[in-house]
Every structure is written in C-alpha cells, then in structure tokens.
Length: 234
Image (cartoon, rainbow, N blue to C red; front, side):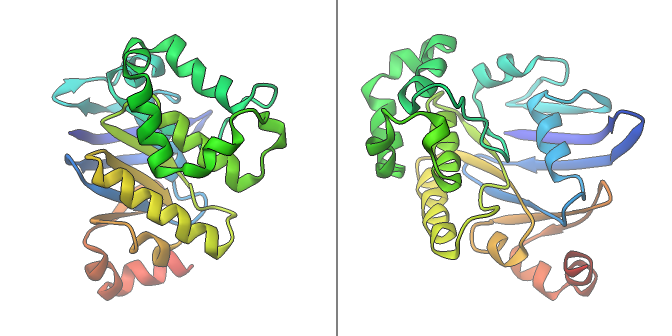
C-alpha cells in the first residue's frame, strides 16, 4: 500500500534522514520506533509532504506521490495526526471536523457513516463536539486529532507520537482505539519512542537511529536483538 524508498531529507542545512526505506501493507499496523531526535517525525512529515525530500521515492497504492502537496496526499487516502495534535484552538471540535468535509468531497458523501465509525472508536468525542480546541486536555486533543484524520475516510493513518505525554491508563485506551481502527481495515504507520508500547500494537517494527533504519522485523525479533535494545535504551 505505502512504500518509502531511500528517503534523504534535510531540515535546513542538517541532513536528518539517510536512505530511509519502509513499507506498510494493507491492514497492517507498523510502528517506527526510535529515541527522540532519531528521525521519526521527519519520516512521517516527509511521507505526508510537509517536508521535501532531497532524494528517494514515496509510493502510495502504486502511484508515486513524492512531489504531491500534502492536501493531495490526504485526498488520496492518507490521514495524518501530528505529534502536537494540530487542533485549531479557536474552533469547536465539530468545526475541526467540518474542515475535512469542506476539503474532501468523499468526507461529505460519507456523512453519518463516517461519524458512526469515528464515534465507534472514540465515543468520548461525542461529548466534546461543542468545546473549543483551547478547552481540551492533552489527551482529548490527541483523540480529536486522530478522529479528525479518520473523517477523511483514509486507507492509512500516519500517527506521530500519539501516546506521548499520556498517563498509562490513557495509553491503554488509545491502544484499544488503534486496534479498533485496524479492525476497520485501515492501515497504520505510528511513530513511537517507547518500545514496550510499540510491541503492544505492531505487526512489524522498524527501528530508526540517527536517520537510518537499523532494524525491521517482528516485535519478538526486536526484543531478542541486543543492538536494537541497546540503541533504544540509549
């Protein structure tokens, strides 16, 4: 479904990604795990088109999308929830969702079916619809960000550090939500710093360090790999 081949990405004059390659197949939950500063967010933002790549290719459903702007990638079926949630603070939760409807015809066409899917994963959001973004807790913002990404009826979701800063009980709640999203047939690529959290949701893992993929395999294989464990522990 999604293939990334040999991405080279810079932030200013600094090269962050060095030949990053990965793939996400249909119905998979893939976790990109690494320490802070390893290149996880840069990878997600490059795939979404928020950062340009100097080299490499991003392919979605067999179509090269490397040069497409972010909104075109979203319309093709790539949903995105950033690390900081990106909720419009002056708008209500409902208005945050309506932005997707304004931008995407298929979100409008989905109507109540889309809302039913969202509330099936996050029933809590129903009670937040009239609340403005500035009056949401950190966990509520992350919940709304993922729900808003689902409003576009995506084939794949890119989630950047969705569990960061959450209490353990809330992390468990979000893990349950991720499993429900996967059960809907939506693929996931999740950036995560904590290996123990990653193995709870991953079909496969990619470990990244200093902008390079140093491991790919199952969670069980990662736990047995001394180099991966040492690198992720710092």
